[in-house]
Length: 226
Image 1 (tube, rainbow, N blue to C red):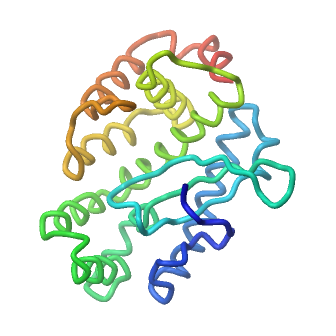
Image 2: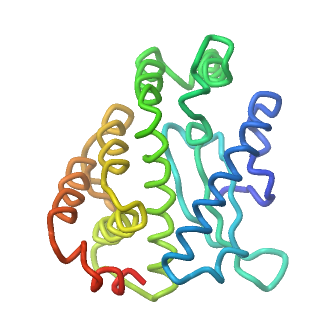
């Protein structure tokens, strides 16, 4: 469990001068997406429980939902994002941009390789899809919130991931962000099943299947999601 318990959006170990303004800007965008997604899912009352944090210990493109007890009786819902999610295409416009500076800093620390640097730059070259990919990830995590709140259980945890992908598809209205994200993640992480997650290629196949199935474009699917 990560020790991040404030709303600033920046963990204690992140490079504050480089990322503080960036993190605050990104956090506002993320909260806007969270609010929209919860409203669409009929869970708007959960918005006040959300906190959003950055954890510099998360390598690559990583996101997770953590439910924890706060100092009050309420249970907080925490969306934790890795630093790469706080960058955007415009942060790589030139060598003085914050994205380049961050990459250089990480390479000096030995946390990124030349191959990683190239993959990150290539990922952000597509502004529209890299932005939509972040939206997909946020909405995927809201899919897990929906599962927890509705008491949905899955014998196979991989089915939970596919279900959360379907929720993200519904909220976005397209699969392009998800397809772009999974196709790019194969560069950073092995494209194979884990104990809890299907491979990226299987998730892309499932998204294509969802888009092509008439049920998932129907009112019945909308009711199912809610």
